[in-house]
Image (tube, helix red, strand yellow):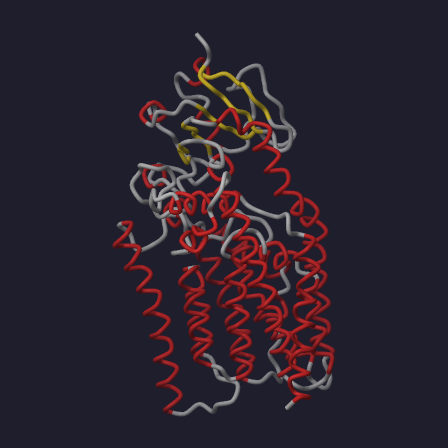
Length: 469
């Protein structure tokens, strides 16, 4: 027993150590949506409700249902939004490190050749896992839950698996097919018989019931069963397919193609990885970098790789592993250095231009960092605003109608200049980064009514206030 505990402890340490370097390197990574959730959490803590702006009706601007409530207790002090964001980063990092430790234990339980531990190189070299583990989004928590599910399948803890995948699907609706494919897949230590068919069916109903409960709560609280983001970001199958294929090649999931000689339950895990990529394609992919939507499936891909490497002659598995590591190395080299600096650059922007936004109603596509300073935010992406989400166009190409800014009481604009461009002789002559912004500056009254008062360096944002008369 002592020897077994020692092996389990060793495997857990190996798993956690494999995750740690990328987590430390990319700890500065973040996306603007994380700060949107932080603003919701701050408003909850202040008693204003689940809202983007105090006094507004409640809105479903946070896709993972309940995530803002988890962060609300941390939203205290002079900078409640930042405190909530920092707590989210720590919770995500801790969840992923714990999940990586369990993934190491699951690999140890596979048995077979010691070469199975080489699969942890997929964790060691994965920029997506490191970046999203501590990005301040719910992704780190979901990563931990996905790792719990993989470990639970490997050690025969099926009830825990059902709980983990149900919680993950509650937080991320696109994980429903992945969750169902796992609970319906073969177990590690049970033969399929009539009893097992019934048990798997009941487990699938548990997942469906959990997701249905989340949809019912959304409908009751916000008037729609699906997150507002599903309306703000309309799926595009072509873009989704391209996204899923690129993620499959660059994130290490190619190892899920392993099939021959694998145990049936490992094949089931491989199928769940493939199913999730198809689901992500149908959902239309994602605008965020580093394969965010497919990250929850990667612990399963690592386990499949380990199972293939555990075979007596793992030459094909080693080849797949080499291909996967090449893709991961390419993604890390190309996106890693910039990703590591995102957080510091975004906070520098807040320092450079944020004071000019205090007490104002600001219209912008980037509602997150602007929300750290602005009194009210008019979200031109529609992610937190149902009325904007209903406008024609995508979340960065809204057709903002005439009179919209005046009707919302907007007295400041924050726009992003396209990379490599500078302010032109006029707003209309400036190349802005998003279609929404290009359309906005052509609205009647904007060119002559707003003047640039602040600029940031990198990225190049401009703050426009009403011109002095």
